[in-house]
Length: 157
Length: 264
Picture 1 (cartoon, chains in turn blue, purple):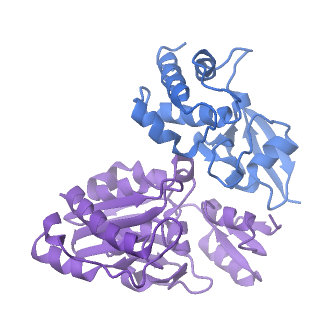
Picture 2: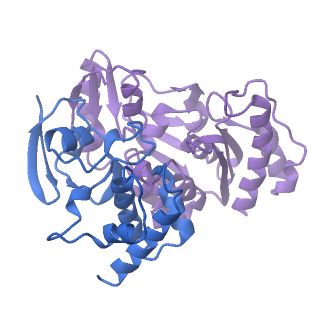
Picture 3: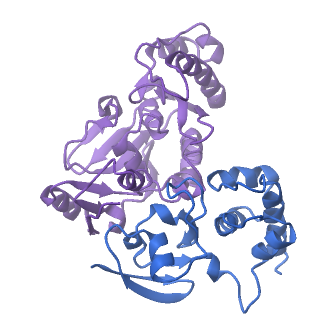
């Protein structure tokens, strides 16, 4: 079987995969990192969003082999020294989740938005979340969380 | 998903060789359509030839009155390119409204054109601007490229390498997105420039097509009002659970006017 090598959350990893192995399958089934979720498996819901070379992608719609040599960041890579990332903290503070299934993807998407727009408007947040579905919250508190998380990141907390 | 052999060539020539030697080979660009169709078993390639390892296919250049976009350029990079926005703002805006941010980070212009989904956005811009499609063996004018439902002028084994768009005086795009998928129910791209006055429609027919009656009206008078009363026949248009052919025919008029207004 072909071997792939990449960096996941700062750690070099390599694994044997089939041609058809998806990036999300590599992360969850082979590397045991189950923070990245599979919701729809049809690239609509965004529960599987991770960063590949700093950009958000749907890990259910990318082959593991396509990530060869890439820097991958998952939800597990955000907290540092036992302390949540400000965007994770903001979701907790603002009740930005109920069941939590969509949350890893929401947070990874939000972090790319903040890179482009450090102070996103409500409209910009809602527009950016086009590919992230939440079936609990009605999005209102997610939008609040992302704006609060962005503010905390601007403040350098 | 059925398994396949995965290849990652480092040149277009090697990709062409792999493609010709595979029994049922498919090229993989961004994979945002191809991978879902393989998962759904609508497609069963023996070999996937990933173009992602080929350098120099993802460059954007503006030179000699043309915007030249490498086939592997991601939608997000077209949308985010200052050079594209300055030369053809409507093209950058179109790219920035395809799918969602994560899809735009993977999907490519070459992949979109090779697939020629009847509801994709890029075909409207390619036809509306009178672009030229460059492949590993020739160039194809936009007017000769779109042949039917998921059908193009590409020969088996032919690989798109770039698309060049003549910079127009004015251009605008308006789409009525499907509320769930964001694919165009109807999208209309209008332009006035080196390729003449053109009105290209996506989402409504088997593939992108030109609305010549609207082109004639806009050539005489470039204004949304010039399109008043110009109807599109519903005869050959798509009809599905999202909308009837008559509804799409009506939307072409509405979107064309909005596109002209956006073009200014």
